[in-house]
Image 1 (cartoon, rainbow, N blue to C red):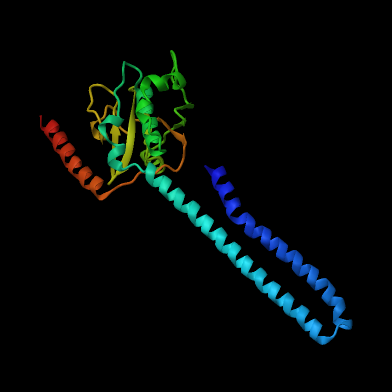
Image 2 (cartoon, rainbow, N blue to C red; image 1 turned 90 degrees about the vertical axis):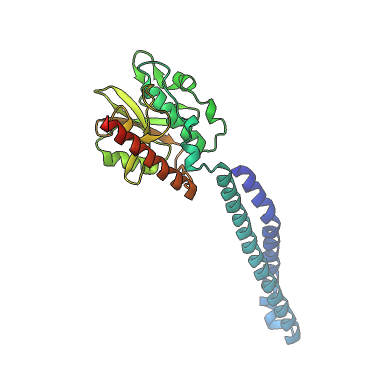
Length: 272
């Protein structure tokens, strides 16, 4: 895409630049003889030569102005195309957190793999990959899983690079979530269990727990198998970077309604 844009820009501006170079050559060829004619040629002839130089310089300035205008128009067109491309790939908060995005682990002791697969699916969505549904625990396993060991600390699957780091605090987790709308996988080594923390919204951490005895979808981390405080390690997406999610007013209203329902369910569970 970048190559095509550069070729198009060269085509649009090449002719103007060529004319400008020709004008500069003509101007130089006129200036040199006029210097010598200034002594021997009658005043009328000098005036004619000077007038011609002035006219040529005026035309040069017009060409320069046209060139600048042409460059600006090309840049504006490229920016407009970038915006349109981003709009085509835009993913809303509701789409990113739809139930079909999340998964449940296929067997015991693969929670880290399943949680990472959910994170990779979300990163793929945000980067414009229309085939994100084809990203499954099975397809990621061949790149991310070391038999008899577990999830690799660093790996790349479906064009998404994932890295591992130690996690020292909730504030560090929140900082990561601020840069990674696709979410962060956290792991409690003492449990042991891993979940995908999806976002930090209105002072609440949300997640999706791959455990089959937990709800599907996205919900407050209070409903998960582990807590954020208990996590000592995490996996997050290194590439692609600068992913963004579109949060609409409808998303916020839906989220508030869902939050109220979640809290009522939690309150009922506590009373029982």
